[in-house]
Length: 217
Ligand code: MD3
Ligand code: FE
Image (cartoon, rainbow, N blue to C red):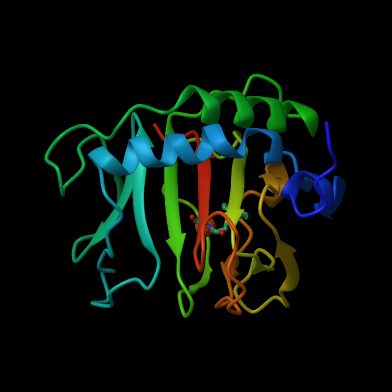
């Protein structure tokens, strides 16, 4: 086999960065599965397309999103919540692709959360200018389970704050193939995503896909 220096596999970082007492970035952990994961995203979005949802405050989110699994996160004028039915298709959210489940389970186990069986997966799509302002994820029923996130495509600067909105946020760059696991004492920390610098990715162009596996129900 010839060595291709321009392939993600050869140039990406591997290893782990601890970003909180119970939070870790697993660099390149999803790289070997990127094809299967992107195929999973295509299967999901064929049934439940990306859409820009409205916040209770009346804003339209710059990040487009969809879901798969038993429960899907939605927002509208009435608030944030998990539903079993996609309000756009009127059908249940698409099934969780097996590749998502396996990756989430293995990543969680790797950093000390054995037996992670997510029932919800929120898929976010970023384009240049998209951002996610500082927030907590607290619509899930079970805060003992971790959240596993997978980044694909353009890099992003992730903001990792504290338990109070005013706490200073650390900036953590996330690259194609990185997987992050948050749990335990870090589960309710504020976090967000800065708008991306345009640096098209060979596979995804000027887009970033992030999906987060959760125990919601
Ligand atoms: C830290 N997504 O969907 S993933 C989200 O890159 C969300 O699309 C971001 O925040 C993204 O809610 C960041 C990371 C993430 C998810 C949940 C967390 C970080 C977290 C829960 C607690 C602490
Ligand atoms: Fe979040």
